[in-house]
Length: 209
Image 1 (spheres, rainbow, N blue to C red):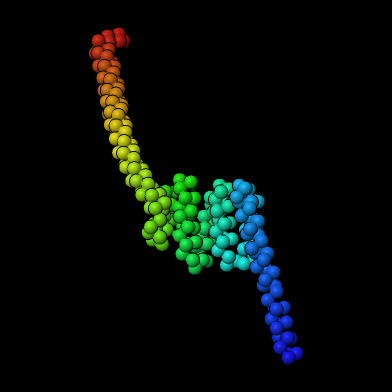
Image 2 (spheres, rainbow, N blue to C red):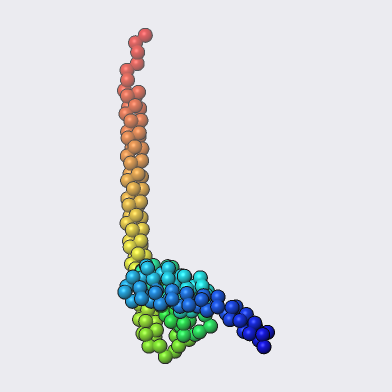
């Protein structure tokens, strides 16, 4: 009977550190959530990070950390945090939400192709998510419009360049004509001087020796 109590005591002793760790982990998440709800996102961040240190596999802590960074307008770090959730979680619900929020973070940075890619992946995980579908359709229309505008701009730039080339050709042609005319005038001047010199040599009287 004595051995039985010894074994039970040993099991409890081994379990206590894990229980304490779990309590600290949950306490940090609760504190982070309180600060998050108050809009104190910068103060919530270290609480979620503390929970992750206690348990790196905690999906809630990772997901909330990413959202706190997003709310702090730190979109680049938020994207990395959402990626961490996507890479480590086995819960498709967290993965889908992280992809959706990652797409929103990309859209805030005007990164349309990246946001479209994220929303497409989110929609694969949850085809019934209307918010994802709406944002994706809106982004695709915006991309198409942007592509059309870029084509128009390129066409306008091409026409402007062609117009400049024509004007430049006209200027070059005019310069060449002016240059040839200048050469012709110089040639005529040389011919005139030569004729004058010949005339002087013919009319000049012989010397009286």
